[in-house]
Amino acid sequence: MRLTYYHGRVPNFGDDLNGVLWPALRPDLFDESETVAFVGIGTIIGFPCAPYRQLNVFSSGAGNDPLGRWADRDVTFWCVRGPITAALLGLEADRALCDGAILAPLVPSRFPAAHHDSGEILLIPHWQTLDDPGWEEAARLAGYVLLDPRGSPEAVIGRIARARMVLTESLHGAILADTYGVPWAAFATSGNFQASKWLDWTRSLGRGFEFTIVPPPSATGFLRYGRPMAAIGTSVSVTDAIAMRDMRGRTEQAARPAMTAKARMKARVKAWAKRSGLLNRFYDMSPARTAEALTGLARVVGQPSTPGTITQLQTRMMERLDQVGRGGR
Image (cartoon, rainbow, N blue to C red; front, side, top):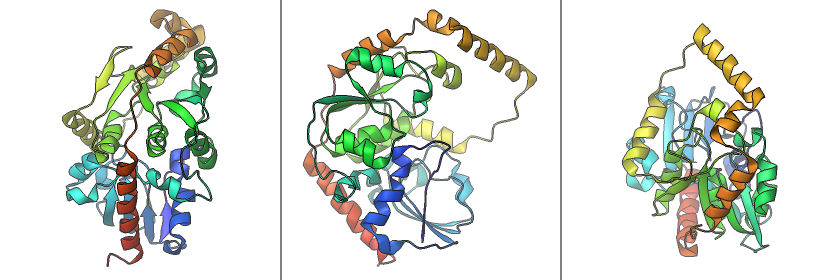
């Protein structure tokens, strides 16, 4: 089967991890098949995957694409990211294992095998958030190290495995921190934050999920993605019902209509506001305010999952991966 996963216009270490991890763990699984695919890490259930007719899904999550897109394909769900995805798809509970990124330490030739504390506090915004100005200054003012999730999987995971603490808007920043036993806390800066996929993952670990709304260093993200789901400074707890409703809405939504003249005018007004800095003043946004909020977040960071929990999930996932290799036997 051929390994397939999301390739964006810019790199993202969580997606790109697929190309390193799976061939290292089970090189015998993969060839240049034009009809059979292995679908791995990412929120990619339902994503475009022509010309493949047979899909082997392993540790993927739902939430970005319409589920009906795969209706005419032969899909085997070996395991999915978590119980929210499993329930949405109507799968048996044992199909919910975890995100495949937790297997990274099992490839010591490419990734650290264990945590080694360097003393660094890492700040990992979402890869799209980093397009907005002010993050480098915010990190400097807080005394943290800004880690770009658009780096290679080896470089990003190597830094996470050596961190003392991780403050992250990137889901895979949290997953890798938790895997290596690094304390972490999640934050959101705009409406681009998808809480349902986070709870899907934490539920696979037997945990709930809470994140904090942090003011971004500029209002650019508000213009592109809308305001976050709660007021700045709020700590938000996500319930299963909220996550399911959000995930169902995201996977059932219709295609967006073409932009109207009114929408084009609105876009031009937003562009003017962005250039003028008007929204930054209106919302009182600055790198200094972001740094202050992140410093507060670091004081209430949570503890990672126990090593026993991670080891148990890794073992179960490797057993399931062996089943893929044996064709289900």
